[in-house]
Length: 293
Image (cartoon, rainbow, N blue to C red; front, side):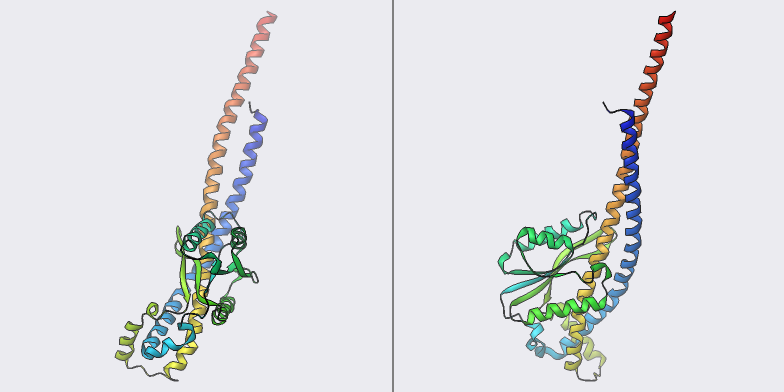
């Protein structure tokens, strides 16, 4: 039987845990709001630059296919940029990413897949699975990520793709759709797909608008494609970070509510146990008084 003292200790312990989870929920909410604002504000720029590259793709036509970033790589390996969290306590965020990774790997030869990875959780999982990590990106941490850092990562991926070892490059990250919906997915990164840029629609827009390009379309295109790839990496990292804190906020909110329910349950048991003890003591006093008579 659990004593009244032990129940009191348990109630205090659960109360301390509830305070911690509530504080973590507040921190996650604050960071979520900050990263969500950045993610939402970056989307118009990303859509505009993708549309501009698509229109230029249509203008250049078949010349685009001759560029290295638009051709399949010379190697037979696949490089994946995997984005996970550094810490736990974020619900099913990492589990969903690993589930998506396993489903994707089931359709490929694992021995021909290499990884660039953000996040301690991702690196730990890949090592446990025996998968090859080409680069573990730790400096600066993902939470301190900015566009300059994303641009460096994008250039690293492009350099590896052009090295001749890889056939293609993919991004495995989590898309932030709403406060309660964040979907991990594997999306192609390199080679750039002209079809994915909507080149046909861009062609009609360009011709209809009688656009004058200065300098020529090819020069502008070659300058814009690296910016487009950097923007894609930046958005992938930013939305993954936003999704992580949304998941962490939801997990800490559930933990706080569970701790509150457990505390209520323990208090009910504690009150009944204390009442039983009081009743026994009263019976002992009454019995002793009767015995004296």
